[in-house]
Length: 400
Picture 1 (cartoon, rainbow, N blue to C red):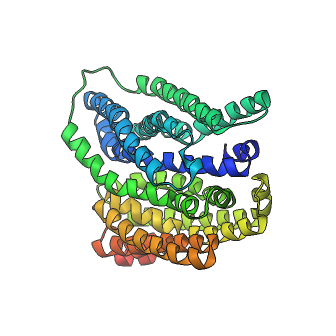
Picture 2 (tube, rainbow, N blue to C red):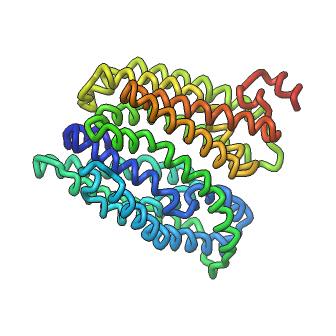
Picture 3 (cartoon, helix red, strand yellow):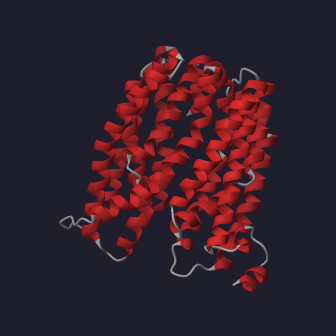
């Protein structure tokens, strides 16, 4: 999707779209009131115990939260962003977020719901692939028909694509649940979701904070140089999402099998290194596909980002263990500390080194957060270090 839009929109307007897309992703989790993250933890036990009445009630609660809370929260944030942003282009067509974000929150919630009720392939397909494919096809059709894509047209295409995915998810979910009068545990569901929201919303913000700060400090042209590197490095998320999907049910067991987790993590570390090496080797042609306006600068930024991604297995394992086995608020405290250090470092380095200084600061913050989470997981006894770092089975047994 972003590859086509980079070609269709031009560098400066694509930079503005990248900021709008980053805002969308930041707002999705709070718009859903945390249910996009908590449904795996809430819905999976209900499905296993055939509590379909509670599943029906849970479905209504997350839909109501995404629509009502999403609209109110997004409206407040957009008003604040309009007042605070010094970049004039950032204020163009932001009103479309009032449609895109609540619909996107529903899409994310329903994808998580599908995964929780053992429809993993359909959940992942609608969460990661279907929306992007539909948007790319729609934008390509409009480009060849109109000859040029403006930001407003792209926003309209996003609304149409998300709406199609949401409808398809309704169709997929309907036959999975038996018809029952809905039952509710609203207070428990909301309190559980809000605890995950506290850390999850921060994670979503920090994941896109680099794009927002580059736009704020250096403008949309700098974003057009930086964003292709971010998207290509972000392909690592395909691997981490896949392994995370396998890891989370292991951590939800009454007694975690440390040897099983260790075997999975060994494979995760190996695949992560190979995937990062492949992206680094293909850096120049991938950036060229995005019409990277400053190819050498983009290549350097991408290599720095990929270097930080080498600790992704550590971060995924530690963060999942804290959320599913331990206290989710630990993730929030780590996030606040690491983000504060990162932003202060980015502010200092961008004055001296510009864009590359911001990238180094955020990579340092990414590694710092992963290391602190791993230390917490070990200290609290959620997992031992042999599991996380996939040492030999003998070492795992010895620590057990």
